[in-house]
Image 1 (tube, helix red, strand yellow):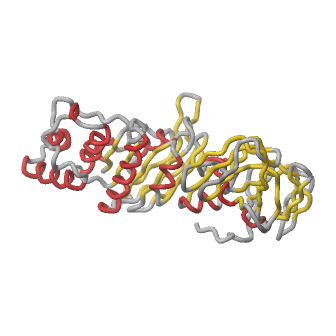
Image 2: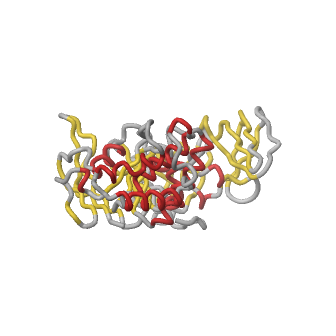
Length: 368
């Protein structure tokens, strides 16, 4: 296990800066996920840690060593890519042990490490099979096994599941999560899929335009986003974000006016906010109750999605066209109907015109 630290890390391509002076500390043994939209710099940042991209400025430390000027082979890392990159003429065992053999490791040690990794990944019955006769998930496990046999300080994963179908992605998520617990290794994982980030990570780093928007546990980011971007990006379906006007702000509350002249008082610290300014009120789909408490708003339902264990209602509410409500179990509501949506003030987030959240005074029973 090893810690990883980025100190004022910058990456430029000509006159274009794609990573802007990132400072980040990742603890030994953590499973850290870099997440963000396409082009946010997450893969570039991973490649800078790996030594596949040179830093324009700043430093990279792995296991308390300054590795900024070291080549990838000397950094104590192993990387798993989106492409399996397996040799088609080699068996599973030969693919997994190839790197060790090229480094002069003796045959007995190679075989021992390959067998140990194969058992961990449930590949021990497939060691004589070639890639053409394997599924996508099995091939990706071989690629992961090739990384395991190197006994690296840090595992780096660059969108390793994006080539798999939905069912295989779920299976491989579980495999990688189990692998992390078994090896207790430091792992850094890049994805654009925030569901992968939420289900796998100890710590999530949310990136946008080469900058870190927020770092924290999955539940911390979900229940306590620091800005509008994180609030809208983390969560599936995303948080409902309603435009509003701040009527009055204090150290204990913000009184805002929603679409339709609906006034609501939310327990946040808004003492520095300007009355009359535009704000955004956010609430998660699952926090929208059907009966009792809070304020009631009419929702014009367009579509009802019934998933068995829950139902999602999509439509217009509070001036928002893509409003989403999650209700447990089966819901009889059909498209074209109007339902009442209950909003509890303590479940609401308020974001100022600068996109930053007003600090909440209560966690409303939310973990994280």
